[in-house]
Length: 201
Image (cartoon, rainbow, N blue to C red; front, side):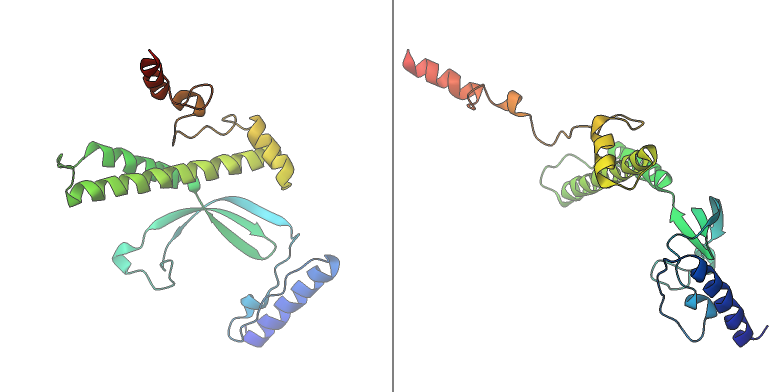
């Protein structure tokens, strides 16, 4: 098939679909690749979706992966219109980060408080914990979106905070003590109250 014929047949097919469906996003065309000229249809039909395993031939930066490092990667694939969308599996990434956190906690450095190794260990622990909580939050928000069945942010926010999702409402963070624990009723700490009582006697 000649490139010109392929471009013509693809453009006719897409134009027919675009005339029937009003909404579309125009893509920038590249003269060498006829498939880049296909517009993105916002409300295109979804033909197929599911798990797809493919071998990676390029890294994130677009460079070719060396033959020895090419591995199989799982994606959640959605064939929408004439475009195949590959989405990453966030649950497997969460499991990987959780394993890294456990492995990190099993191998602490020697107990010298001001050494460089201790500082690096502490920083890595904070980073891994942050990444784990980030993926947990992202997955819980995706589950809430699927559970709510809508893209409306107000309804989604209401379902997240009311606890209609699988895991209930969002959990509290433990980054700082609550006001009731650290302070008395009038805002002063209990140790300050005791000192004042001693001074009054």
